[in-house]
Image 1: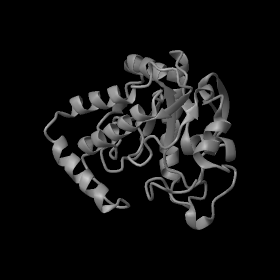
Image 2: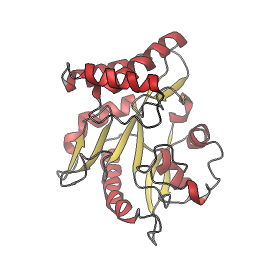
Image 3: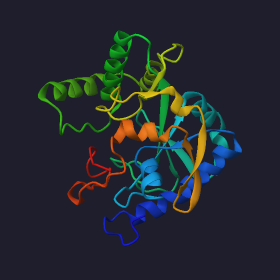
Image 4: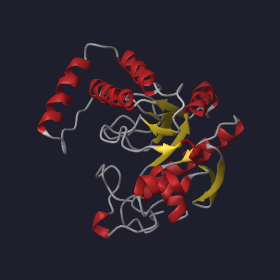
Length: 258
């Protein structure tokens, strides 16, 4: 945790930790396996808590556990709600004043693992359609960092998407994300992440075969048994601390090093 508030993240970290504690209790009470994920998992392994410059919390679930989570969500404490205004679901407090800003703050992101389609051609079509749907779903389109061709594609899909109701577009997105779930391929991926990240990282399905307890800010949470493989694929040499100039919050820079 950013105890000295060197990076200006302490307030967000203190706001998010109690939410994570309640989510952990909810999952354990309902026999739902989840895992700390991304920078949160890296923080648990490398820092035993928040990466000092990290200002959000991420968790991941496989599709079966995610479906169980949604079916049981009405049992969450009354003060919480699930926001589903894009293609990713987020949990936050109902009284969070920053839940609908862009990018949202004070929310815990829920990422979903689905099986990668057996055929490469099928996955390429899948990734193309998901990116198309993201452009259709987005309320605020950020063009920074994209080539002119992709900027035109984003703009076109954004305008085209206005024709369809939001719930229909999200239903399509969920359906396309699960194209590979009846296959036999041994890899999984998360298709409800960022536009640039879709399909870029694949993990052996064995990382989710079991779950372990892990310490984070003096509390015990759940982590995928294959956390080392997950972090290695995502970050490479994940125990290496980045240079100070590369330490940016996730909301400052999507490609921030962790």
